Image (cartoon, rainbow, N blue to C red; front, top):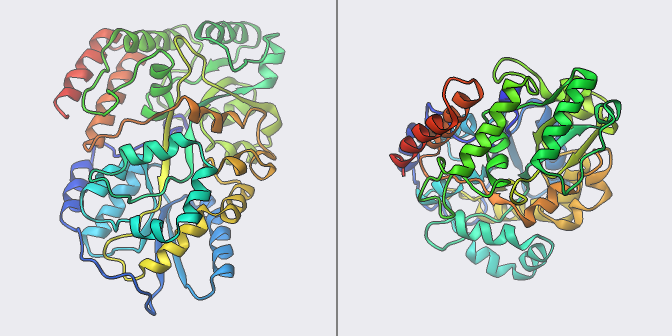
Length: 431
């Protein structure tokens, strides 16, 4: 995973975002009814070849429990949500409509607003005890955010699923070699900067891998400085306020002082950390496979993001909606219930999934915490102070403006005030 791929929750890229909205608008589909038929239950999700191997074991477990349902699951081997949604939109526009899809926060409101999805409210009412038990095992913030941000008409199209928050991954070896105490949950920006300086001076390693990724490298700094890219309802951009500019200045100084490698290129943060060449990088659960493959799990620790004003993290979560055109809605609901069940969630966590289980009991269990860095539990605890990643409908252009502005700062091509001011103007034109 190179530096440009650190964010596993990247939304629509600059190209294709408008095309996606147009494609979705034109393929609402008709209601195919809820009964079962002889055709397979089709599920499309985002997963690299490596991740598909894990998912396939989960699907085998489902088929074992429900032999009456023939599941045809297809992982699209892409590494960011933008490319996934663009690929999916092309299929939908061509009439290839699966029964169930995986949709991250970044696309949930957009998909729900286009008439593509079947409301789940009747199913939820029918299986009230099952859903009540699921919600009781979940941080209530996930439930409230799902209601607030993933629907435009008050109907329920998604059950909140697995998620990613942001914490700081750090090399315990480099901190020890530099004689710097390992970070704690209460550390500050000043503590972070001091650690970068000491580690660079004592070991020659970079302190932190700065980058222009919206979810993984921009939002954590904004939120821990008491600001965000947008207002709470995503209607007003706030990218040029003084606290955002201060966060950008802080990151620019890390690059200028060579405490961070320059952005871009093929710098591989996980490999560099495993090799003792990088002390810290931002991440959710997704680096775990690479870290395990590098035999570096015991060398790493995870800690909440350092704070300037308050604790903060972006959050994005999975949803598994049933397509309105599906003729296998009852089977689709059975599949969704398996995904959220204690058994399904525990099995997936045990396999080493790259997302945090929504169930608190599973996130705190050995199935999730074994063979994971010290501090992995902080990823779930971050829900208590996290902020949903702002995802207005024009997500492609929004993300491009946010990232381009930050990139201009990191490279020193523009001052933070000028770069974020220009980006703010672009964002205001989009919402």
